Image 1 (spheres, rainbow, N blue to C red):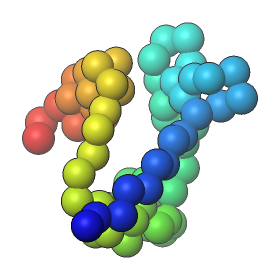
Image 2 (cartoon, rainbow, N blue to C red; image 1 turned 180 degrees about the vertical axis):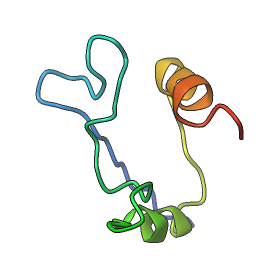
Image 3 (cartoon, rainbow, N blue to C red; image 1 turned 180 degrees about the horizontal axis):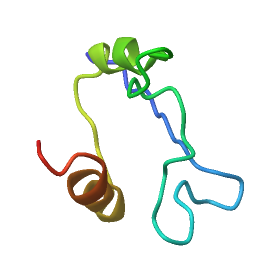
Length: 67
């Protein structure tokens, strides 16, 4: 049986992006070579990810459109 872990990233008002859909204020995602953060280790521990449509669209169109 798999362990299920719920990981939610959002602000107190229920959002993660600003009014324009921008999330550039987030830090530690590994995009800064001098500050790799811990996301890479976290990603290695994940088997399945469930996203909402807005989050999926944000990732595929703005954060990593060339993948």
